[in-house]
Amino acid sequence: MSQQVALITGSSRGIGLAAAVELAKEGFHIALNARSDGDELSRAAEIIEALGVKAYKAAFDVSDIDGHGAVLDRIEAALGPITTLVNNAGVGVMSRGDPLDVTEESYDRCLNVNAKALFFLTQSLVKRWLASDRNVDLHYSIVNVTSSNAVAVAVPRAEYCASKAAAAMISKAFAARLGPEGIPVFDVQPGLIATEMTRAVIASYQKRAEEGLCLFPRVGQPEELGVVIASLATNRIPYTTGQTISVDGGMLVPRF
Image 1 (cartoon, one colour):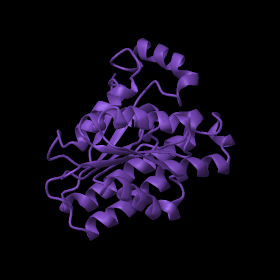
Image 2 (image 1 turned 90 degrees about the horizontal axis):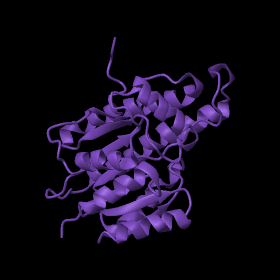
Image 3 (image 1 turned 180 degrees about the vertical axis):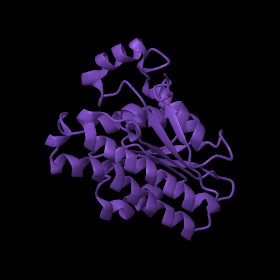
Image 4 (image 1 turned 60 degrees about the horizontal axis):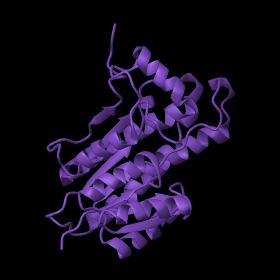
């Protein structure tokens, strides 16, 4: 039986888990990912299985490039061929501050996880797709979750911005490469979203949103990102690829 299977990195909570829930509602089997197999990943798997589909706990570090192939093997042995990749895993800066004080360690961490890992995991899966006979009844796609900071500077998080700008360009590069194959690639750029990563600053985000930073005067929720990602992965926005989808309440709309 034809079956959509999604690998969603960084999906034990937040935006990744919200995307997993929405795709599970669409009938996708889900490979959930976190760096380690703990209670959080187990709870995420329970949530997905309660929706009537299979969940596989794919505990691995996305920045372990050499391990990607073995991970994909394990997922496909458990769930079947992967049809959908949601690159959501990411890290923030080690310490907010002046770009003049950014350490090489923090810079490398952001670039390795947010851009390099995304590039090579995508490459590894795409090579499988192009070397096999893809099921014509299934929709294949890649959705990369980057950030509004791919285009909007946040001075205290310069290395994070650089990594997300790189990820945004990687999205376009793969969209150009895979267009002839009929495989769409999207760049979803969240704005101010209430997640674990933003918990420490969400109150200030909410205040800035209310003061006019966003056209909608509020912060966004992970579930809203989940709906957008699922819409892209299920081809509900057809004849579209290489596009940036700004899920930011209108924050990046130019204004005078």
